[in-house]
Structures are given as C-alpha cells and as structure tokens.
Image (cartoon, rainbow, N blue to C red):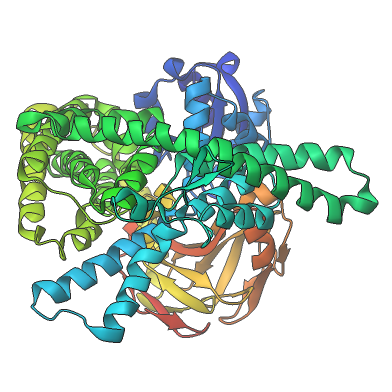
Length: 629
C-alpha cells in the first residue's frame, strides 16, 4: 500500500474530510483536530498499514507513524484536501474544547503541574524520615530539625506556590504573584495550623471584627487570589502609562490584592475549603470501603474525561491539613488494575504489533502514567477497560478497608511505595497492589479479550523472493554497533519521559538526556535521513542499519524553529561527534516546554538487542546505546 492509499484510508477512518478541523504533524505523529470524536473509526485507524498506534491527548487525535513517514503521510492528506494548522494553533484550539467545567479543571491542572514535583519530593522526604523511625533510629537534634525543614517547607509555602503558578497561567507577573502569595503566610500573621490546634494562639482581629490568620496549607483561597490578582494586574497595566508602569502597576496590584486576599477572599474561601475537605473526608470514611469502591471505580473514567486534575486539589488539601492521603492508595488500585488489564491483553494476543504496544504501555501505567494503556489498548477493545474499572473498584474498597493513606502525593504503584515506608503500611500497600493486579489481569484474560480471527495469506513466490533479496541486501550491514551520547547532561530512562508516545516505547527503545548544553552531536557515523525545518528533530541511519530519531524537547515543534539552529540537511553524511544542531534551552523554558531530548532506535524490531550503556551525568561522546542484530 503506497502513502496516497494510506492517506485516503486515514481520512475515511477519521470520518471524512468534513470531520477534520485541521491537521498538523511533529516528528512522529499526525495530529488531528476533529469535529466529532464519535465519528472516528479507531479500530480501523489502528489497523492501517504503517500506523504504530493512536490516542487522544491534549484535545488532539494523534496517530503515530514514526519519523520519516509522518511527514510523507502529512503531505498526502494535505494534498487530498485536509485543512492545515501549526501545532501551536492546534493547542490553542484544543484549550477551547470541552464545556466550561472541563476547561476550568484543565486550567486548575495547569496551575498544579509545576508544583507537584515539590510535593512529591516532600513526600519522599517524609518516607525517609519515617523509615528511620521504623528502624528505631529516630533523628535527633540538628538532624531532626533539618528533616523537618525538608518535610514541612513545601506545605508551609504552598499558598505562595499556588498564587505564583496561577499568575503564570493567567499571564500575570510571576514575581508579583510570588510576593503576593508570601504575604498570605507572612510571619506577622498567626499560623493557621497553630490556631486550628486550639492552643493559646488566636486569630488577629483586624478593625475589631475581621478574624485573620495565615493561610498555611490552603489551596483554594490562594488559587482565587491568584486568578483575580493576575486579571487585576493586566487590567491596571492597560490604563497606566508605559512610563509609569514599572512603579505604579506592582504597587496598586499588591496593595489592592493584599487587602482583598487577607480580609475578604482568604477568610471566605478558607471556610469554603474547609467544607470541601470535610465532604471529601466523609466520602473517604464511608463504611465497608464504599468510598474506595466509588472512587476506585470511577477514577480512570475521570482520567478519560480529562478532568482528573481535580484530585490534585483534594490530595493537596488532605496532605497539607492532615498529613495523610487516602486518595493515593485508592487511585493506585485503579491504575494498577488498568495496567494489569493491558498486560493480560499483551499476554493473550498473538498479534506482535499489539504485544509491542501493550507491554510498554503497561510499564508506563505501573510508573504512574495510564494514558498509553487506556487509549492505546484498553479503550480500543472496550472490555479490558470496563473490567479494569471493576477490578479498580474492588481494589479501592480493599485499600479503604485496610486504612491505607500515603504521606504525600503525585506518585503511585511502583514509585508510590515510598509514601508508605515511614507510616508502617508498606506490606498492606504491596498486598493491595497485588490484589488489584490479580483482579485486573484475571478478569481481562478470562473474559475481556480474544484475538480477532483474520485470514492468513500464504506468501507468494515473488514475496518470498523479495524478502530474500532484502535479507541479502542487509548482509553488508554491521552486526553490532555502539552509539555514543549526542548530548551532555543527565541520562533519563525512556519510561520516565513526560510524553506517552516515547515513554510507552511505541516509537522504539532508546534513552533520553536532560541536556546541560545546547549542542547535539551525531551519535555515530551516519547519513542524515531527515532534518525538520523547525530544527527540533533529526533522523539518522547508521552503519548497522539503526534508524535513529533525535527529538530535542517535548512538543517543541510548536516553537516553529524559534531557538533552534540546523547544522545539517537531509542527505548529509556525518561522522560521530559532528555537531548537527544547536538549541536555546532558555527559549524552550520560556515557552513552558521540557528540553529533555529523546534518542530512539525507531526500527528496534530489526535488532535482537537495543540496550542502554549510560547512566547518571554524562558528556557527549561517551558510550550510550548498544545495538546488535
């Protein structure tokens, strides 16, 4: 089947030209904005030749073709009349999709995403401190004080972080945001936790009738203050003359918003937040594990709907106010069942393409990212998804009955075990994970999946001759090759990359690097097969026949080449260590993107071995990957 025929099949499976708003592509994926998702024949899309997988992400239907192929398919679908758009325009369009509630939750998620790593690290510090206590090696003196700094700081300054991030999302000055946030927890105010404990410390009574305390650990008041503050600052900036902007705008913004925050928004929404917290705890404390049954059963449905970021708010409240997070264990049960269902499909299917997709997707789920498992496998076949919901509900109920509650948030399943080391619940946590996995696997293996029977055609003589010719042509290739690192920086395991297409292994095996300098070098003697005009991605073919994709950053195609410099062109022959590209990490950061660079062997299936040789901090030119036939 040629590329034109593939393009026609893609358009038909998408529901026809009239169902496509726009199409764009990055280094590996055809990104499609559709009018009606229900009109897409997803099974047909998955079965089209050269398609390596497909899923919805960020409001786009993304079809994985791989480097060197996707641009050809893109050219064909455009030639057949599909409207085009840049990936940046598609992202802006995707942000407008969904109802008001979905857009609000998506925005709430955007606020929390940059904060979660600090909360995760704090939870791990809590786990370490608890481990010392469990081993009867309690920290004392200065070590204990230092451990409290590690475990308490993030929650003390949480309101400041929320205000800062909200200013960032809504286009306000982030420095003004962080200062305004720090005002909410100023040392002159009574500590909210101390006041709540019922001791001698009382709220300050401003003007004789307004009770004011610090907002330590508060989330909702900080979010509302940040939202109103960012919009107020932008409104002030519009009316203040440019010559006075630097002096007047910050002064008015901080003065007005500090009054509103401390005396109006803070007190009112602190009460609202307490009611939300009480309602959350009431659901979690329902008898006989009913709370876990409910949440465990619906959590992955909420993930599919795209509004699961609401759990970030609830978890942050629980951890900040109680030091315990029952949500984490329940969510872990739901995610474990989802990954187990994917494993069952991978074990049972005889389809090598589906096996290659299922196992990496399951690994991604067990590391805390279930989207590849959901969209790549379980939802595609429906029954695995439905049965995993049942298993997740039972696992969630079991977690509630056991009284499991982590001491942090943001990590689940395998890395999530660290949240249960210090509180003495590690054994119960592992038991819950095993039960959830067993249920998800057994239900799916027994009742959830069967391979569709398809007619298998015996290869013709001409086909056999072609295969033999190709095999003979490949005998001149190097059987084994060591690739060197194309960048300096910190090695990142592929499954830890924040992009499901790469982390799931759908594109092939490889490694990633968090770069420390902005130069990319050739990892081997090779031919440049593709050099994107945007400068963010390159394809190379080495002496062993390894087809490499070097993808600088995640979603950096949306920068349209800003901050990237191509040093090679398609068809160039390069030696190992030759600079092939430069990039500006600061500009990538300004765009709100991640500069982690992926190095993928896209034809992994052609090799018996593709194994990493590097770890930790490296410099370019050191041994990086080994490929062998």
